[in-house]
Image (spheres, rainbow, N blue to C red):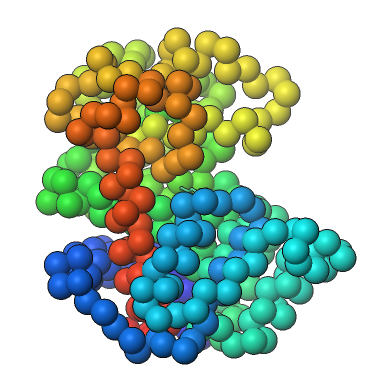
Length: 292
Ligand code: CP
């Protein structure tokens, strides 16, 4: 059975550090490798994406892997009623080197990976997890602070609908980071790994890193109101000290999670996260495709 990446709990600290080191080498040495030339990577996105899909596409091209994109209901046999599982089985029968999948909670991704002869990468699975996002987030912080141990990371926003936060908790606790949350009661998590705060001021006084999470209106019920969100939970530039780092997995609702002035601050690492993501995915694709 080939190695897949569905969750991070079965990836050790050493393996993750190796991904960081190899990604750093890609930048330092501007390495061009052609050992996957002529092979294909199937990028199967049943849910919408800009960053993750194009990042995997860029990473594939840099590796010489030809990316095969499956990304819209209208242009595929999903329009004729074919199921997600049948679609994946048929694409797998074309023998790509790897299957990169974004899907809803209802899709049995982990179960499918357990019987797949092709490695699978979770590129965002409903609200369950987004491990490559957590890897690129953690690497961005690792490059900044040289260690994740004891780093105080505050999650702000819509945690309860966020797959990103699930994978970040999985990874950052493995490395001994300290984690906190500041969110509306209906969007916060019951998780003993997270410290809670009474006010934004108290939360920001504690945090070295602020990770804002998108308000996911598409996953909200009709009784979830956001009218007071901006007043109580928006992060503005004047609330931050110069050495506090701001992350957001994107897409950002500017003027909701973050005020627009944040984009111009040197401590805002949002586009750096995106750039770093390509190197992380390049490293991961090569590792899984070549079983190294
Ligand atoms: N961060 C992230 O998953 O963004 P996309 O939904 O655009 O891929």
